[in-house]
Length: 403
Ligand code: UDP
Image (cartoon, rainbow, N blue to C red; front, side, top):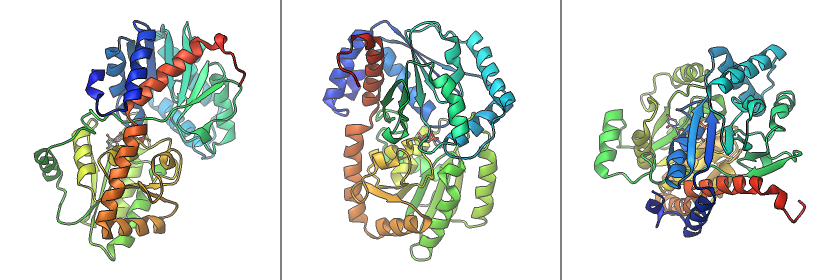
């Protein structure tokens, strides 16, 4: 399977992967998160587990189960880590722990390395049996609400290491911290090349007109993705450039706020026939792929963002992305070179018009964007990094330099 990436992924990454696979052959590597569908974490795990297995590593992916109250609490924790003031009572923390205790009884936690994704399953570390335990934070924790961040710290400190997506999220914690950016799979249904026929079939089925440029944002309906800001920017552009706005999203089972936000977006879009709101079922990978390919301009106007896989996805398809200058987005977009970073609705509208009015420039930027993703954000690099962290933890006692 890894051979399929030859010619696409950087050769050095593939070589390192092969060597690391030799080190970890037959060893067990467990990943745990809180949803099988929706959002970037599930997206990566779906692709990464088969790759790890093809390398001879005994990789497993488990998903914790929780009741509605649990996911309401964890969404509050998520929002607090991204800066909202949220009150998590002692009773709520206890429920968070209790749901994890029940999951620990049902999930086989016995593995040589365990990677726990995000805060929902964080307390599982209390039930660790053996192996290296790593907490992987995908959230934008550049400016968290301290009470909640500190309360979570009691779990974080029990891990052997933590991984953040962006250097500025790291916290000088009294433990090993690593920075690993997420990645996309160039061979997945979401990112592979599509034929013209496949693209046409999709846009026809979804009712997307192709007679005017399309402005696209793909994301969960979440306030931090700023869908209302996107509509406002589109309205400014629309006065000068005729265009169509497509907002594509799908529900995530661990995000209880999605339906409320969707309702708000629909009301705000009102009866504008040129705003197309698509609520796609989970695993609509080819649809997303086709939409990203037909879009004239791709937006990711987030106000907070762990990384923003949608940015790399569109860049891989040769699109210059206009993204909020937050979280992991500036890692991906070099302003004015591979896309534009924006700080306001007005700025977004200005950059949309700039790209619509200069298609040649947009094309050149898009080509650079694709090459940047090839070098930095393909899944082979991320698997290499995870295995390297595992190696570093297992060999910690052998270090010869003090950091
Ligand atoms: N996504 C999808 N369908 C949708 C909306 C999003 O498949 O309707 C995918 C999107 O293509 C990307 C992931 O979900 O792969 C979102 O990851 P990102 O890091 O952008 O944001 P998150 O949702 O994790 O905050």
